[in-house]
Structure formats: C-alpha cells, structure tokens
Length: 556
Image (cartoon, rainbow, N blue to C red; front, side):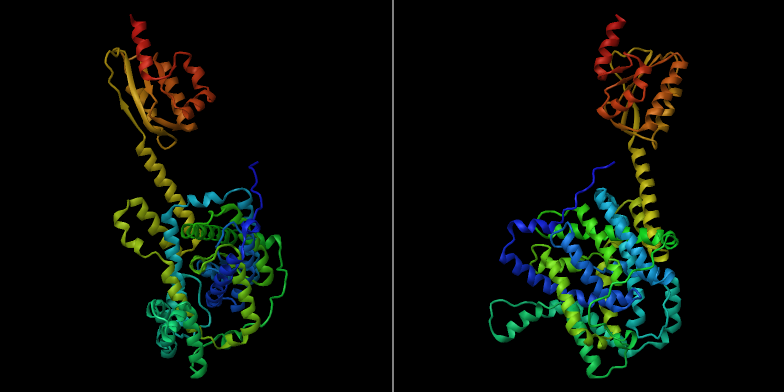
C-alpha cells in the first residue's frame, strides 16, 4: 500500500511568520479578486445552463475552502470557464440533481488522488493534449454564447457542437441589434480598458489620480456596470437576469441533501471521471502558473487535490457547481499583491458581502453583456498561436493536438483525452522503438567463430523484434554470439523474454550467448528472471574488453 499523503494545508504555515503588513496586502488583493470574480461567477453559471446564484455560491464556498485547505499560496478556486461545456452537457443529459451527485463523487475521487500521492501524475499529461482540449473548450464556450450575444430567442440550446450550429443557423434572422451592440461594447471595453486608462506617473493632479485609480478596476467590472446602467436607464429591450431568472437571492444558500443512490452513481461514472480529470488538470496547471509568477514556496500538488476534493464534496450540498483553480483570478490575485491563502479567503468573504448587500441590483444585468465578457474569456483561454506553430513540430505532435481539439469540439472532453493519451502512447512506443538499434562490432583479433553485436537504447516490448531475428543472422562457422549491453539503459520483461528465447535458440543450434557490460537495471532483471543461471558463470562478463582478453588468453 502506498504511503498516504498527510493532510497539511498550506495556510497552517502562516501561523509562524504572518505579519500585519502581509494581512493588509492580502486584504487588498482579496477585495480586488472578489470584484473580478463576481461577473465571471454569474456568467459561468448562466452559460452552464444553471441559475446565476449557483455560480456565486460556488465561488464563495469552494473559493474559501480551496484557499483554506489547499497546497498553494495564492491560487484562487471557484467556477471555471473550462467547466462550462462539461456542466451544460451533463445538466442537459442527466439533470441538475445528477450533476450535483457527479460533482460530489468527483470530489471524493480528487481527494483520494491527493491522498494516494497521484498529484504528480497530472504533470505527465502531454502538453499537446492540454492545448488541444483547452482550445476545443474555448471554441465551445464561444459558440454557446452567440445566442445571448446576438439576442436570439432560442428556448433550449443543444449541448453538442453540430446541434448548436444547426439551431443558430435557423435563427440568425432574429438577431437583436440592441443586444449585439451592447455585447460588442462590452467586448471592446474588456479588451481596451487597461490600454485606454494606462497609469500615468510623475503627475499628481486630480485628473491623473482619477485615471490611475480607474486603471486599477478590471475591464469586466466596468463593462458589466456600464451595460447594466445603460440597460436600466434607457429601458433597453434586451433579456436580463431578472427577466430570465427573476434575480439573485439576497442571502445565504440553504443546505440540501441530493438524492444519492447506487443506481444514480452507476450512471454517472463518465461524468464523474470527466469532472475529476478536468478539475485536477486545471487546478494543478493553475498552481504551476502561480508558482512561476511568485517567489513563494512551490505548491503541494497532493494537498491541492485534497482541497479541491473537499470543496467539490461540500459545495453541491448548497447547490454549487464543480470548482477548480482559476488562472485569470489567480493571476489577478498575484498582481494585486497577494502573499498567502488569506487573500483567497478574503475574496470569498467579499463575494458573500456583495450578495448580502447588493443582490437586488443584479436583476438589471443584461445577458448580452455577460455573453460578451465570456467571449473574451474564451478568446483568452485558447492558445491560438499554437496552431500557427504546428508546422515547426513533428507529425505525432500535430496529430495529437489537432485530434484532441477536434474530438473535444465534436464529441466531449473525456473521449478527446482518452484518444489523445492512446495516440501519445502509440507514438511514444514507436519513437522509442526507433531509438533502439542493434549494430555489429568489429574488434581486432576477434576469432572467426565469434560475432559481436552492440545494443543501444531500451529493449522493451516495442523493440523486441530487432532481437528475435538475431539467431537467424548467426550462421556457421560462428559458434559464439556476444552482445555488448553497455549502451542498453533498460529492459522490460518482454525484452528479457526475447533474450531468453535467443539463448535457447542458439543453444539448440550448438552456439553460445555471452552478455557484456550490463547496466544495473538490465543486470537485476536478468538475474531475477533466471537468464543469468541459464548462461552460466562465463555467460556474463563485466565488459567487452575483459571478455576479449579472456577469450584470446584461452585460445593460446
């Protein structure tokens, strides 16, 4: 049984040297991230096909728990854009109660992964797969937002890619110019706000100070507030949170037990694995980004997975959605000066305060504005430049990236990752088999009845064919086949079996096999596998030169 990882939240280390100055820095960063998180939490929930308050409650509860219990210093947890298409699809196919059950089960799986120290395995995910499904999810998010961005009156949007294209093509004549203009204005504001209001130094007049202060506000908040004020002041004929959902409750979420059952759990294996896999990948990638942006101690991946697990177990009991680490909010947290998980906890508490005080104002938020914000999120999520760089990489890399991208868009994330991993393994096996080679060696003074071959690389199941044919190459008058294994770095049981078959075939032909220069790993397996006993005391030599001296001495 593997050694279990201790449950040791990073926040506990704060008790040693946490100071007032650090608290003030974390307080400012947390308040900043809380303001940034509000429109994103609402937008992610609506895009996922659920009520807006579910996104806010997820940001509050999961965000607090992930910061309190996690293994990262500055990571911010909550609802993530990558989950939008996953949640929407599960909600459409299985219903909201089963979505909550799948989230709880995924939380248990995430906690178990951290407990068993499997956090490091997520780092072995090929970058081509990560880029492929990230870009695919970005395309699906952008496509799903066209309905509200264009103001189309579509009652029920399908979850699949081609279904969405079909429905959008049927309603394109119903575009609302007001919604399109409002959404476009929000896109422009989010994209241009930081550049338009760049900080100016060296001047202390009131106008400059106002610009400097305004530059600290995120473009998403400015776009949301501006669109809401315009919608309310001019009575714009666009759909709002109030017209579709009736508003956001002004209060804390209530605790409710989902109807857990074995029958439901059996049906939710794939959704559970999808949520757990995406949550693990996103959270640990986000934590690595945070590590690269700060000089703080690096994150503990296993503790982070356990915190994600706890958050995803608890949040659904309050109607919350799957949660993970969020790159955009984490980067905002770092740039705002966060020094510890306290900033993440402040972010969650500030969201709670906003809900308690200002929830009634949310009824006027236009959905076209949220759609515009999400279109920018989708654009920023995708690594589109990787498509232009594909020509510089190998065919396997291009195949895996494009295959994962297409499968994510056309089918779903689980299928894409499964096929991507299979392709990655196949290409890796092929590449490793091409690196393994067998070459003849010419030695001065070598007897006419002796043949020497040198093996390079790793002798594993994908390369054994190059060894199996050696017996046919050893023809009379050759009596001795010497294999120089100094350049052989490893073998597996298939490689061991190939060497044993070679030894038996040569023995039947009246010939002898000698192995020279064994490295530690091959030597250990050959000894344990019984080949060393079959070869006898003279069948294994420390190196080729030692064998050659002994053979020449015995010939005299």
